[in-house]
Image 1 (cartoon, rainbow, N blue to C red):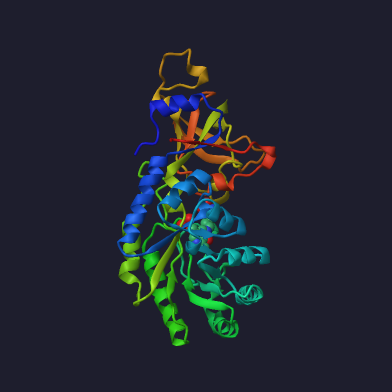
Image 2 (image 1 turned 60 degrees about the vertical axis):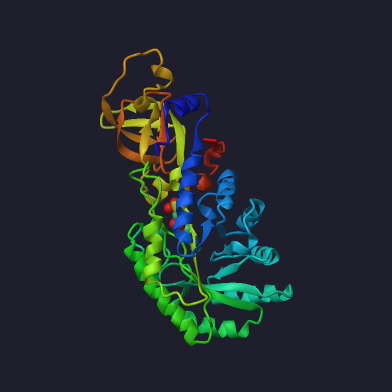
Length: 398
Ligand code: LLP
């Protein structure tokens, strides 16, 4: 599906930039594809809210019946406020505060994904004080390499997440001691933007070993939670929908699911990434001897992924590519087709505030509208107020 046409580009011309543009139809079709592909196998999907908690986005996701994967008390609260079923909320995070644990206990969420032995004891204590039993899954660090950027790898021994395999005997002891905990199962999340499905095969092998370990030690495993991480195609933003079919099929083929067990997932990026673009305007064009710079009115304060993870996002000049021209070109009827190379940068006082170097674009002018694609995941939610910038806006296709 193409996200832009003359009508919406004309509309953007009237609006203040920068803003996130959400194509709700792309979102709907993506959610639909995920629901169909997971339902076929009876798999449960929790949407990883950290990827995007824009209220309109949450409202739509909730209508598809997905649960919520939360990593803070505020996310638990937002999930409830937006209508997610509390019985489908999982709560992960290496540093859950007492206040957040208490909120989740009061909310009667589906399950805590517990990341350390000490945390097991704290949840046990806080649940006991309320006369409740907390349902827990053990987040195991499986030491499986996700083959993704090391900043978004989570499942290796050197990462802070989860409980390492050699600590499992301590987990078993704690579970036997803690009367206010109900052991539900095991949880994994090895990283994000994973495009090599072989990685998930390796994860399945590890999940199978781990469930055997727990069952052998007298803990029946009801829930197998494989986390999230399915990647999207940042190089082809109009290739909207991630390959949910192949992703779930790997688990169907390689996970040893026993009778009565449930298989859960926590997908974030793959559900929302392609549904939004960051729309910005060219403020200035600087032509240097060695470099041309396009200076945008959006920067790392609106989308930090390129600066933080060297992430690629496709950049398009909507005004020139569509023939709907920017402010400075409205007098000029001649249409230029010459392409130039630009470093596309933001206005923030940091040298790293660069979206991409040497981008091949049509000759660009002050006022041109620029789209930075595939920005629906970890975009708006990671915006900051650095340089006392305005909060980035959002505009919806419907
Ligand atoms: N479950 C857990 C426990 C997680 O930590 C995450 C993401 C997910 C599920 C969802 O993963 P996804 O399906 O979205 O890959 N800010 C980074 C990504 C950080 C991911 C953090 N954890 C980025 O912009 O690439």
